Structures are given as C-alpha cells and as structure tokens.
Length: 317
Image (tube, rainbow, N blue to C red; front, side):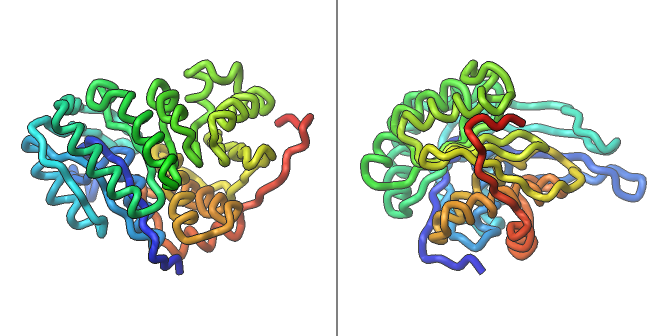
C-alpha cells in the first residue's frame, strides 16, 4: 500500500551521526545510525512507500561515515560535499534511560556551501511537489544554517506551487512562516517556549494555531505528547487521538507524525486520512528504539483506529 509516483523532498542541512550504547546479554552493544530531524523524517516517509529525496551536506570524518550509512536507508540522497563537519553524539541507554556521553556540534556552512545546498533543494523540491523543511541538529543549529534560508525556501517553493511542510520552532519557524507554508506541525511545548501560547490550555493553543494559519498555513498540527493532538484545518478545529501505546523512547514521535502527513499528502490522501496516518506513525515510533521507524503495515493498521473529532468553540480539555 502507499505506492505513488510523487516524491517528497526533505531539506536536512546537516545530518548527524548517532552512537547509542545498549545492553545485550550483559555486554555493551553499540549502534551507529544516521540521525537528525531530516534523516528521521526521510526514513519514515520511505517506510510508508513514498519516494523521498534527502537534500543534505556531508563533511569531515563524520560526514564520510554518514554518507555510507545513509546510502543503506532506501533513501535517495542528493548531497553537497562540504568542508564543514557534521555533528555527532554518543548516548548511553544501558539502564533503559537515555544519558548523553558526548556531543560534537556541527560546523557552520560557508556562503558557497549554503548557496549550492539551496540551489539543490529548490530544484529537487519543485520537481517533487512537496517539501519538508527540517532543522540542523544540535544547540548551534542557528549558526549552521541562517534563519533567512528558511524564509527564502518557504517563499520560493510556495510561490511556485510546491506544498511546504514545516516542522520547526523558534526563529526558524518564524522565518518559514513568512513564506506561507501549507502545513505547520509544532509541539505545545514549543509554542509556549516561543511565547506564541500563554499556556497549554486548548483555547490558548488554538489561538496560537490561528495566528500561524493567518500566515497562510491551511493545516496546523499541535502535538501534545500523550494527549490528543490539536488540529486547525481551514479554520476548523479538531482533536486527533491515536491509541495509547507504552513508549520505549518518547523522542521522534513528532518527527514521524510530520513525515507521515507529508507521505499521505504525496499519496493523494484526503487530509483527514493523512492526519490519521501521521498520528499512527507517531504512536508506533515511540514503541521502538529507532527514531523515524515503524512498519508500513502496522502504521496503516493503527491509522484505522485513530479518531478525529471536531472541537466545539467553547470546548476545553
């Protein structure tokens, strides 16, 4: 299921190498994977049967390793080789929780590297028709790619009939909104941190969603951890509730949700069905150790159990 001739382009400016230490039969078990928001989103889009093209940069020793690892992910990779090093982290999960051992932030891209990556992304996204804009990883991500890049990408793609899906926060979200993206996914914590929402109450979150929609977004999705997501679609508000599953790793659920919505749109799904697919992908992902993972069949089966209910204007949860 989910075959489509359409593609999704994912802007992933600087993927990172993830090293995770697990416990296996009483001994450390190391796992090396490509990571970062764009990688996780691309992985989920591909898992759902949609062709995905990753627009990214690889540089330094970490970039050499990433180039090899991403090549085995069933993802089409369009890269701009750069001098800037990709970032990496080492996490220890031997006791069941995630503890950071070390993190190397990515280097900033030069002006010429950015220009080439931008050109590559615009051409690829216009050919695909749908683009997901993700952020660079690490605390220094605003230095890796200037926020102005997100404004330019959003404007250039939207004005040329490419559906832009945004999963960003802070200054990057503010910049991307200036281009009027079609879909915006954001967490309730991010809205509060950005002072777009006064609290996590439904009325305050929906007020923030309406301000985002005023920038041109037809669909605004607010994830709320274990609580039902809030959705503003063409001015109408809804809750999206997936079956509750015991989490193994709560990270990555939001990225999987965004990716699945983009995959659903590429597969010409009705928007409500794309939302169901997104909720199911997020729910499945948190039951797994790998971020951006989940089987196509399991996600689609769970999507049938996702409920979407219209919110009355005065309803509070």
